[in-house]
Image (tube, rainbow, N blue to C red; front, side):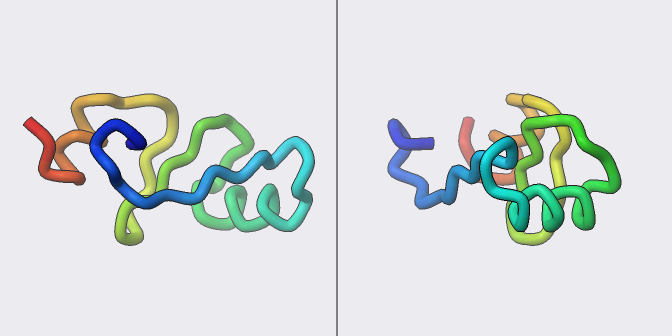
Length: 57
């Protein structure tokens, strides 16, 4: 994300209990990472899906 100069917010749900609560509400589970791109939730590192949603080839 940094290499492509996308703005993002990195939250440590192990330390930030409010961020953990929001993550579980959005994703319905406790696994990480959870990536929210314009309201679409991606659970786990799915590079192809992330690139698709960001318009990266």
